[in-house]
Each structure stands twice: as C-alpha cells, then as structure tokens.
Image (cartoon, rainbow, N blue to C red; front, side, top):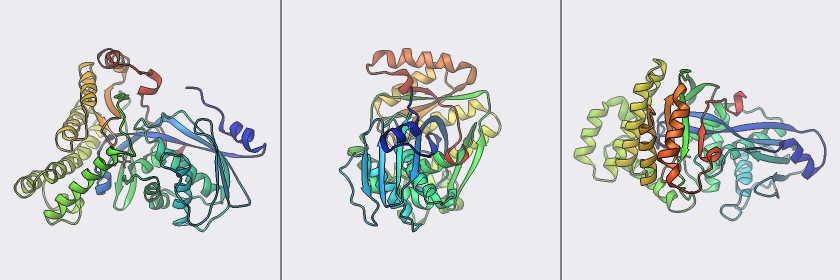
Length: 387
Ligand code: GLA
C-alpha cells in the first residue's frame, strides 16, 4: 500500500519549514487475551504496518492536524476539551491532548500530518497507535522526552476519552516492542521484557472480514466480560487475579469457581486464570524454540475465548480451522474479539503454503477480500520508542 511522505503532507497543508517525524506500529496479540485489564501479563508483537506523523511546534495553543484519509481538523488546546461527534478522528487528537495534560503542564500547540499503512478497524490497534503518536508529537514538540513508564501512566487512561475502556496492552506494545521479539508486558507495576521469536517461526494475521463495531454492541459486550471476571474474583474473596494466582493453583481456582460461581462469572473467571497460565507457558515455549507447543497453546486459547469468554463468532472459528487445516502450528482469534482478526503461527518456511491454504479454504468463499489488507505476514518489529 503506497503511503505519502508525512513531511511532504505537512508542508503542503501548513507551509514549508522544518519538521520532525515519528512512527508508531500496529500490534497483534500472540497470547494473553482479555486479561490486560485484570492486570495480568500479556504477550503481543508490534507489526510492520505503521502510522507516521510529521510535526512542528507552534507558538500558540492551536492544534492543527492533516490526514490524507480522514481530513483536516483544528482546535485550541484548552484545559477542558469537549468531545467531537463519536467516530470523528478529532477525538484522538483531543484524547492525546488530555492524556498529556494529566501529567505535564504544556501548552505549545502543534501542526501535524498523519499518514498510515495500518488498516483501520482491523483489530491491529490503529487507534492506540494514533493516540500514542499524537501524544509523542505533543510531548516532543514541547521538549519532553517521556519514558515508557511515564507514557503508560497516561495513555490507557487517555483512551477513555474516545470511549474505550481497554487495558494497557496496545499502548505498551506499540511503544516498547523490539525487533524480532514478542513483548512480555506486566502491568502491576508496569514493565516490558522482550522475548525473542525463534527465526524458524512466523505469524500471519488474517482478518475474518467480520468487524466488531467498536462504538456499538461490541463495546458493551467487551465491558460485560470485564465486569463478569471482576465480579467472580470478588465473590471468591480476592483483591486481584495476581493475588488469587499467587495463593492457589489454576486447578484449585477452577474448582472454587465451579462450586461457588454461576455463569457468566464462572466462565469468565475460568478464562482469565487459564489464559494467564497459557501466557507463562507460551513464553517458555518461545524460549525453548518449541513451535509445536506454542501452537497448541494458541489453539487452547481460542477454545477458551470461544467457549468460556464467548467472544468468537462463526467466521473466526472457521478461519482458525482453515489455518490449522492449511498446516499452521496453531491459531486463535486476537484482540477484542466479536469479529476482527486471527493470529496464525506457522513454520517460517511454510508461511506461503499456509497463506495459500487460508485463501483457498476461507477467503475464496467470501467477497471483499483484499490480500494486502486482510492477510498480512506479521513480522515482529520495534515499537515507537525503539525505532
Ligand atoms: C482490546 C483492548 C486491549 C485488550 C484486548 C483484549 O484490543 O484495547 O487492551 O483488552 O482488547 O485482549
């Protein structure tokens, strides 16, 4: 997908002059789904599709932003910003401005130009990448070189302005991933540890061609999963999942849930504790270069997301089956669910075979498939802080 040069777009819109450029990749979660908001570790990778932002400082408080796709916006950076209509990308600019002012007293506005080859609404975190990119641009234009921990204090919270109450996985991944590595992210306290991906393993990200409407019912469903997990935890008398898992084995916790919780609390609680164990085992499998084990862990995660958390759909289930039938080592839905993408693990030397198999078994029966948007080789790349 050809993209414009962001500095050229900035000059075309706002006049010639010096500018700085930064870039923020998308992300795909390998494992640890719907547990980041319970503050349990997750394991995503950043991918080689990105948002690029050219920016320059202004001497007033105006924020002006140009996008080749979404159009141009501008507003004054006042302490209290009113949300724009739902779905307007101006909300991401405002969310970034609000995130920054949670922690820093800054008010020099910026001119920015944004270009992207990261497909929007595809479960690849284009919205967190945009929020993160504008936040970094505002900070850097004001001379602030914020570190990972500081950014993680404001970014997940900042996203609430655009209406999502996710966890911190997406921001951590797009900031702190390293080339050829997955990132083991802990949240309490926040830390990020690279886990090298063995060179003989490769990932595909396949879009199911069904999309969860972030603003609609899917958001309510997402929040309902979060609430059910937390409520199950409280009913069993724990303050946090970390505490529960430190005091009891997964087997014991499952037994407690079976005898003392009803559904959906029982199912959601079970997903969280078993998924947490799968993250630990996935890290070990990567460290041992054991692709077969990693594949079976991904498959088990999909089953848990389908049957316990219940965030899959018939298309995602079929896509996962198509991937394994095509020779993948494992596959699972990735991201928030209710549509969106699956992540597929395969041997690097079988990537093209698996890709062709998925096209034949899944996409050939559907309309609207655009290979360079819907079926990507996800090469683990560096996040915005390490590019
Ligand atoms: C969305 C959220 C993340 C995470 C995933 C599910 O992508 O933004 O924080 O909760 O869903 O794992």
